[in-house]
Amino acid sequence: STTTTSYFSIKFNNKLIISTIKLQHKLKYNRNKSLFITYKYQFFYMGGCMISSCKCKKTRLYSGQSIRQKIRSYRDYGDPENRQYHDNIRILAGHIIYMIECIDEEDWESAYEALFSYSVAKLLHVKIKSSFKICNTIDEAILFSRTSRGPKLGINLPIVAIMSKGTRLDKTLYPDKIPELARRLFPILLEEWIHLFQYFISMPVNDDAFDFMNSRSFDDSWNVNEVDVYAIYRGLGWDDEILEEIEDRYSERVAFAKRCNSGILL
Image (cartoon, rainbow, N blue to C red):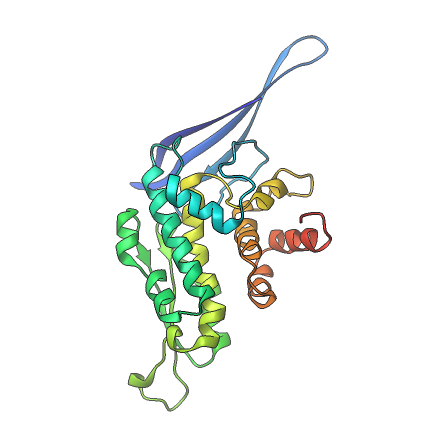
């Protein structure tokens, strides 16, 4: 059994749709000694989300490290075998660990600035696309951010502001000025950067997500990258409030959380 990763472009209407394909080749003889070759594949597009998921084997860089140390290793050393995105991997890993540290320290102003860093996006040759809504409550802002749909290409980062009825427009507050909103919203926005990172490395970041993908419990219709986001946040030691905020968005995250809570994944 061997796994190969090929880098090429598939375009539709002059837009990049797929740039990475991984194929696993299995050679097997039946009783008549006829040769069978089966392929298992994964496609990744610019948003980092998986179009088709399946079980595969691939060398996991920095396996066994804590999630923070693993991201730092990607920042310091990149992926030497990935010539196409080696530099992008290092840049984005450094940016992700910085955003994580800002959220850990509750430095909401710095975190907000980093989440909407157009300069970093430019270095990575991607665009930030944003929709905007003025909301009356924090729950409304969270709902808009969770359900806002962006383009397949680029990073979708909704912009929200809070303005109570009767408040003047110039008194509208943005998330970096509302700690309760920032604490709930920023991990949702960070997901988009993580999806881009998954696209660059063509695999999940967290070891537990990778193992779950290759387990019998993983449904082929599920998206391992969504599981990976939950696994990363769990590995960071973020509190239950944050984990519960993102868990119920996807059935695969719910299944993974139940698996972890049962003690199967430690």
